[in-house]
Picture 1 (cartoon, rainbow, N blue to C red):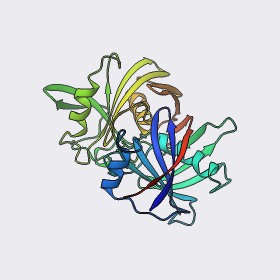
Picture 2: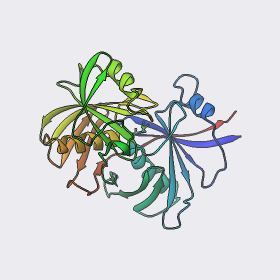
Picture 3: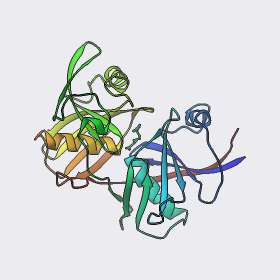
Length: 277
Ligand SMILES: N[C@@H](CCC[C@H](N)C(=O)O)C(=O)O
């Protein structure tokens, strides 16, 4: 069958976006892995699927799959691309869009300048929210990883994140510690791993080794998790500018049960169609 898709990117975190409101298709894990391949397929960090909502209060259902075919709960850069996509495709004219995700509802607002502001919900630090195996909820947890004793913050943004403070993201051991932490037995559903360099109370640099996709140029939920963990540790104050390899995000958080607000760009790259086999 012939599938129409759009390639999009948010700060270099790239997506294949498929409209399953007007098309019918079912993609298997194996097909997703082949489409994600940067040499034999289209190439992307995540596949985003737009579906009709199951809840009548919502505008759409937004499903997210990593490059390894696993379905996940949330994707911040994807949410911004999703908002641009449904308006560009004329699936909605609304500027404020309510979507269901596997990690809970999200509200997306397309601003006049084309930037998208996303209410990402409140961070959850309780270990069982990720899940993470620990006896108590604390700002930093000691963890033995690849022969090293590390201290990590753990945060659920719908999806699980571990945040590690480093002196310099350019020299951080992302390729070694990223996969080791992602597969650490204390994270039974695996974890996304953020390497955070604090520049000032309002500015960090961040690299993220993503569960199921490897290091990406940017991760929206990772940026929210790093800021929430940094504020909780008393290292940061809202608003925080997060410098990622692909560009900058602004994150606002009033603390407690307040939602994290992420603001950043979303771009269409090209439209295409592919025969699914
Ligand atoms: N790139 C995303 C996060 C995508 C999902 C993540 N890899 C997971 O497995 O939870 C973002 O921008 O948030």
